Amino acid sequence: MAVFRALRVLRLVRVLRIVRVMRFFTVLRVMVMGIKSSLQPLCWCLTLLLLVMFIFGTVIMQLLSSEYEGASATRQSFIKDHFGTMLQTLYTLHISITGGLDWSYVSDMLFRISLPVAIAYMFYIVFALFCVLNVVTGIFVEAATASVQSDAEHQMVESVWAQTKMRQVMSDVFMEMDVTGAGKVSCAEFVKYVDDERVQAFMHCMGLDVNTSNADAIFHLVDLDGDGGLDKDEFLDGVTHFSGVAKQMDMARVTHALRDVQRNQLQLMAKLEVTDDERALPNPVNVVV
Image (cartoon, rainbow, N blue to C red; front, side, top):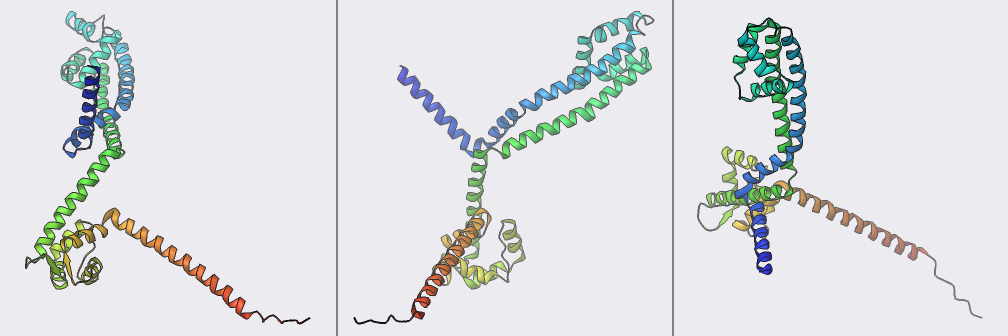
């Protein structure tokens, strides 16, 4: 039985790993990662709100303490129910900005009791809603965005999906260029297709700098076998090499190859200099004893 339980756990782990890398669950993964990364800002948010409510609650309670004795029974009951203790005051201020209590009801009662208290309460509502909560929301969004950007698996899934999507789109482009249906595109067909401004704009959106002036040169660079025609695989591989990270990798390979060529040239020049020096030496004289 223990073996079967272990197998079930392993199967569950495999299912969870599949869920993590499948793009269908990307939105769910992003939400979970966002909530996880927001736990620390949440603690600081609660601390800040508690501090703000404590400051305003202290001011309101001090102002109401001088108005309590001369107030009517109804107003005394209101003060006792909502601002009787610090805990009740904090609770009233909290539900006033979270929708649990209509703040207009509290402000109307405070205006009847004391104008300074009502002004302090209204200033708290404006400050909490338009300043504190907006700043807190921005911090939460920033934390969630940073967690998604630093998630390596999410970046991997998005990169694979983008490459697959690009190959699908460029495959449709190749089918549109191949007007004859022969499975190959000639240089004239490629240049004519690129001459359209809509196609140039589309290529630019795909990260490809292709226009009429360089279409012929790009065609011959992509035509690897040099037969004067592009098949589907050549076109897709060429597009991959001319865009994104692949373009940067190709440039790095070229730079590395140029360094190797330069190193080989320096070694060859050094050998040639040694050979010239040896030829310049005089022949040894044979001494007969």
